Image (cartoon, rainbow, N blue to C red; front, side):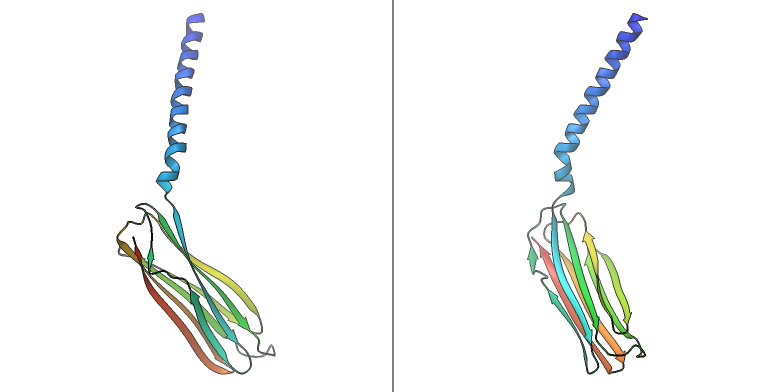
Length: 166
């Protein structure tokens, strides 16, 4: 019985040592395995009142980004929609925001769609491109669009850009 107890104690010690070595490897390697994240931000706005409407995009899409192989790039598109038309019996205004991101043969597309009557709000779209490689590029397209029948107006804005990864 004493021999079995000692064998079990040795076995548990070995398991503990292996576990400790594996955990140390995870802690040391994890930051490198995940890579850095590089954020790219843009903002869209649609506005309507009793006389007019407009759509606009403000962006900081860079021409190039300094990355390492294995990093990630997150494309943020935050948007705000504002409807300041008086009266609640008006037809809806439509506010549409879109983001298209293309990298390495893959394309991701997302939309934010809102109908309003005398209200405002905001939202956001984001795409994360994982495991990017140096000397490649990411294509980004952003759209903001507003449509209304009262007042009768349509406006849109579009921004597109190629981010070269260096």
